[in-house]
Length: 514
Image 1: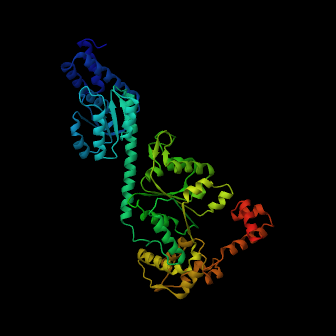
Image 2: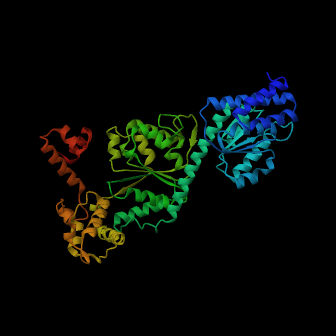
Image 3: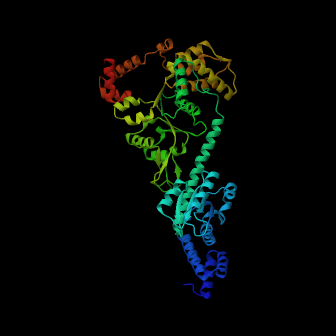
């Protein structure tokens, strides 16, 4: 096609119109190299430019190419500079430690053989190891003309991201680099979150400062936390809304061997079924309509740290099955890929729902319950911790006096009596908001009962005010009887109003002799 100088110059002119400085390089190769080699690079250049015209331009980052073949380095740089922020090339592998230590590359293309007539790949593995020692998160793609399955498998085991043969197809190289760039972006995202988490952890308070309580039940919980934190056992925290389940989860993490790693919390009740896998397991760019980029899931982000799954009782049975599989295998697969990613996490779950009863009702998987509750912690409601209310009230008083720049010396006797008589259906969270509201609106030097006027209109259980050993079974029995009477004995309607299944309600009727 380009067998004489006239044709050569014609081609150069056409090439100049597309890439204004490329023809100077071409002339250099034509003069200094044999014509067969020049012909090879002309064809490569044509393919490169055709590829640029027909493909959506990928957005690549900083790329380092290390190969002893100058021809390959030149061709690769000319292809990639259209797509990458920066393309660096290096012939001498001995400069790798300096380059990697002093630069931040998104992707490194590394030849496997540098010595003439060597095909073992040992040199490539040696330099791959050096790169990983300097930057464990480095994304490295190995390139060689002598590839086989065994070498590819070993490359991945040694920490390579991918393996590509030369001579490559330009489309294949661009696709591989695009995927590698997305992977690096995911690594950077995880690293940023991890650093932010560690910074937050460095600012954390003293042990148990945010968990207030001296009651017998709380002392028992502190003891359990101290014991379980030293293990990697899965923990299930049970309790009503507002009892502080996330605080307990964080306390376990902060006292564990993973305390310097990330703590990731997920509200399972806020995740829709359609986004469940994407949020927890991650996805590949293009896996679905809104998948604009590769994204790590919460399991992957929490690797080496602790994962807190709140409101796990809200999951449907199909989602429970998917979650169980990941917990059992300790590996996730992003949507749109077939590659399994191992995850090393400490799992802590929480719910306000009766999981044991849900197992009997076939609304929660028994095998999943066994997996998540190696150790179970029950947080009592505030109405069963009357002795802790003064401590909690004074704790919140200090916080909100400081926040709103107001000064109160404490609570009057009538105010504290009201706080201890009130049933607190919203538990500690409701108490916290009540103290904040009272501080905003109150005058004087102490908070009085009248400053909590908004509580007086709500039900107060007198028995709770006089007994810290309140019998919850008796209240449940009375409530069930009232609801059944209200619905004229209709069990289905009563069960619906109580938020129970018919089977659960029948068991309670049998339990209480109703």
